[in-house]
Length: 147
Length: 102
Figure (cartoon, rainbow over the protein chains, first blue to last red):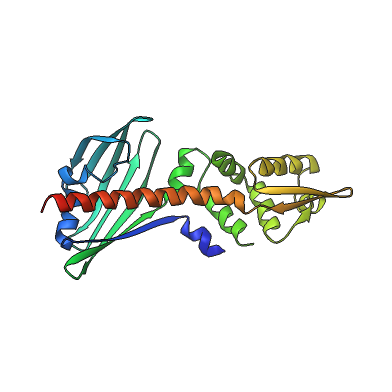
C-alpha cells in the first residue's frame, strides 16, 4: 500500500502528438500558443500570457474563471533543453506561494512526439493552501495506507 | 469533507492513532494506552477522526472497537485524480493548438 501513497505525491500524464518534438517543445515557451492550454481551465478565459523563455526567466498566466475570478499563475523556467526536456516551477500566489515543479520529457515517436508531464508536490500544494501542514500529512497517509 | 480529512491528518497523535488502526482494529482503551495524555483527550482525537470518516466505531458489549476506514483516504486520492485529469485536458488543448497551426 506504500505504492498508493507515493502516487499521491506526483501526477504523471503522457500523450503522443502528431508533431515534431521541437514543435511540441516550442509551444510551451510561445505565449500565444501556451496561453491556449498551459494553466487553462475548461471554464476559464486566458486574459494574460507572458513568457520570458530562458533559464531563470519568469512567466505569468492569468485565467479568468467564472467561479473564482482572475487566477494568476507565476513561475520560472528551471531547465530548457530543446527539444528534450523542460522544467519549470509555478505557484498560484493568491492561494499559496509555495511553488510546485513540472518536468516535461519530450521523446521522438515515429513522426511525432511522446510527451510525459510530471507534476511533483501536487498534494503538498493543496494542503499548504489549506494551511494544514503538508509534510506530516503525506507521512501519515503513507503510514495509514500501509495497513 | 476533504478539508476535514486533511485537518484530521494534521496532528501527530491522530496520525499515530491511524497508524495503530492500520495494523488492525482496537479498543479505545488499547489506543489510549501508549499516549501520555488523558483518555478524554484521546477520545477527542478519535471523534475528529470519526467526523472525517477516517475511523469507524462499533460496540461490542461495553467495549468500543475502532477500525480504520480506508475509504476516507480515497477523497484525497480523488483530488489527485482531478489534477491528473486537468493536465490531460490541457495536453489535449495543446494537441488542438498544434493541429491548427501547422
